[in-house]
Length: 214
Image 1 (cartoon, one colour):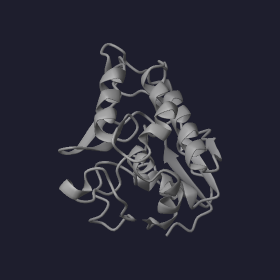
Image 2: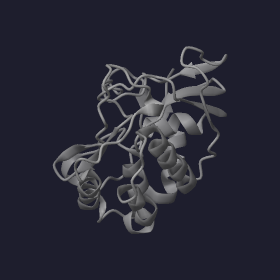
Image 3: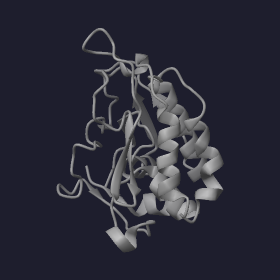
Image 4: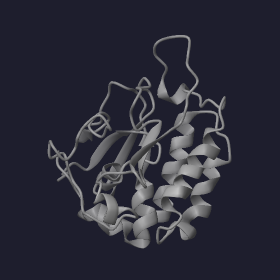
């Protein structure tokens, strides 16, 4: 289990359950704003549960001229109507879930209002999620990329869709009832949206009981 008093994370787009499980177990959270954008990570995508299995929701970004762009400077692309498309996918997946109607008015604005920078967008999402689940939002933005605060566990690359967390015992989830669990079984470590729409006020206890091993 996490024993450090602080952790260092990347900003995520409706981050996975592992991300928020780590947050509720620590006193202080640092969020990295000076790292280079890394593709195929939770920085601009999340994974929800659809009727046929896990579905990735991806926020398109504006490609820079150079090979590297700081995450705080990365802009969201609106060349396609991705907001409308992603909300339709979420509605299809969770409209029948126990708490969708209760929380949809908090979540839907992120699929209507346009934000210029991905980092700012993710921070606003994080603030909203923390408010809904009643997680104390003590996040502090980093001042430099290389410096990891003393006594802080660096999880910037440890929480990633590229890592099969169950197979390496990095994360031990607590099972809860999902919309399609009768058909597809339980799928761990999906987006916090999955937990929120399925468990509502019970989301916080699930996060506390889920285990992060450092």
